[in-house]
Amino acid sequence: MKRILAAGAILAVCCTVGWAPAALAADKGPAEIILQSTIDPAKTPKPATFPHGAHQARLECKTCHHSKGPDGKRIEFVEGQKIEKCETCHNTKAAGMPEKLNTFKDAGHALCQDCHKKTKPELAKCSVCHKK
Image 1 (cartoon, rainbow, N blue to C red):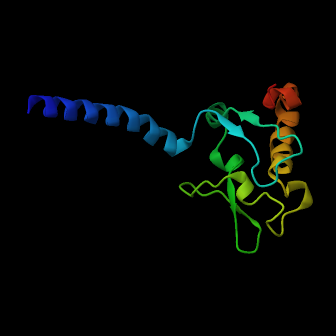
Image 2 (image 1 turned 120 degrees about the horizontal axis):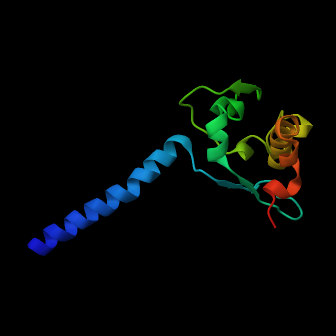
């Protein structure tokens, strides 16, 4: 009986310790994200490393995140809304997207590179995000 109680206590501690970081991460997302298109893969897919946590420290969620209305137009981010993957809307199968934003790659380059060109040009180089 003591063994069952001890095993149950250990399991409870392990689950609590394992779930706590996951619950916190679910609130604001992971610290680092590997971005790669699955709907419109490039000829040579090049994943990008995105330091999400570093961006969160400096920017509001609405700077990057938004959603799309039934008419296909951008809807501004509202705190608490579900965050979808970018390529949910930014893909060639989705209708009504401007050409410069109609793939995940194009949208990422338009948003990320353009922002970096304005704020920190040295971070707009391909090799910063696309590691070898």
